[in-house]
Every structure is written in structure tokens, then in C-alpha cells.
Image 1 (cartoon, rainbow, N blue to C red):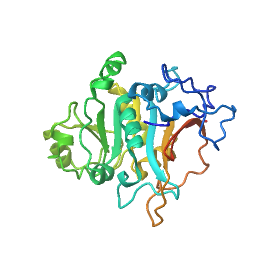
Image 2 (cartoon, one colour; image 1 turned 90 degrees about the vertical axis):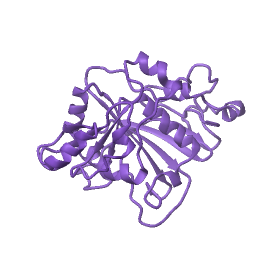
Image 3 (cartoon, rainbow, N blue to C red; image 1 turned 120 degrees about the vertical axis):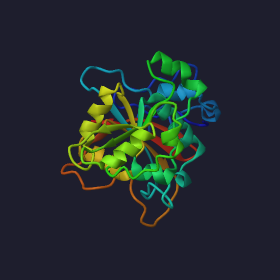
Length: 286
């Protein structure tokens, strides 16, 4: 990742540069950091290692106040589109995918809505040698589990996501889900987790159920409807938002959909990174 560096950390003072980066808390010319510091040309041209990215995006140390930490990772164009032609890849970049992979490598479980799984062609998370030791040290398995949120369970259980994961894929659904679909999921080796009393999934209960399975470092990749449910429930702790320097117009979804909340949720900027016009922001609940 080239020309990527921390701008600021408003929650706990400036982010220290990861060991060995030589990067300062600064930004490219024209971006106000609040500190008066600016990155050197050498910092801008040097590629961060995956270990340095992992340090920059590390989950907070548990403090006993919250059982889980739910982080969302989304991408949006300048005009607010979360997708183009139904997929996020066209508005992404190589740097965005490095952040995407790093966030997955830090998580215990990746949560995604059923439609996102279909549209994006989800496959099982793969083991990454670069993160193997860090995951062992954190008491994690070789890869994060994938948890699919689905009320209907109308999923293709013959796909590799369900038949060939390194760790069993989870399906979060409601108690009213069709028994034959639950049976189909279980025959495929999927673990079905009931996380709602009715047809759908209750966001807060979903987090409790995942925590009971030992999954406390949570990552959701949407889609917009699922993220909107987490926002409405007040369950989201952190948003990692990539702002793509593109304009698409059209009627694409925003990063979060569904009913609006009664009072807007306030989040605080934790850090901001940049590469080739892409901004990688990280916001935490205020």
C-alpha cells in the first residue's frame, strides 16, 4: 500500500506509527491534520506491510464494558453509491482490497447478508500465512468463520462457502425459519444459529449468540440492509469506510438502508488514511 499514512486519532490522541514505518501523523498537502505535521515524500512512496496495516486496524483491548466489538467495512463513491451494477468491486481498488483482507484477518467472524453473499459470490475465508502467527497469539483459528444472515434460508448450500470452508459457515436466522431449509443447511455442514423469535434475525441477539460461540471480534461487510439493521439497533461500534474518488450517479444503494433512526447516531473520527485519492476512514461510536 503506497502513500498511506495516519492522519489523526481523535479518540485517544494521535495514532503512533506502526513500528518500523517511519511515518508521522500527517497527511498529504491540503488535508488538515490538526497537528501541523505533514508526511515526508519517503513516507508517501513506501508501501506499508500487512503487519503494519494490522497494527493500525487492531481491535480495541477489551475493557469489560462490552462483550463484543462490531466493526463494519464498507465502500462508497463520492456521490454516496455503495455499489455499481449491484457489486462493490467496481468502486474499490487494490489498496481497498488490502484493507479488506486485513480486516478479515483480524476478525473472529465475518457477518454478511444473504443478498450480499449472492451478489458478491462469497467464498470461504482463506488462511493467510502473513497473519497465521498473529491469529494464533490472539487465540483465533486459522481463518474467520463466515456468518450469513438469512430469514428464508433460500441459499445454495452446494456452493463452496457451505461445503468447503476451513471452519464451518454459520447461518443466522429466526425461530420461524422453514424446518426443511434448516435441515438442508445442516446437511451441508452449516451450523444454524437461531437469533430471533420470529422470521428474521434480531441484531442484538445475533451478537450475543456469536459471543456465546467465542466470536467477540466481529466484522460485517453488509450489505446496506443488514448494516442499516445494526445501526438502527445501536449495535455498531465502528465503521471503516472507504471513500472512493468516483462518481456513478444512478440510484445505487447507500452503505446503510432501511428505516431511519429516530435520532442520528454520532460517531467520532478515529483515524484517516489515504492512497491515490482513496480515503480510508475509521469512525467509532461517540
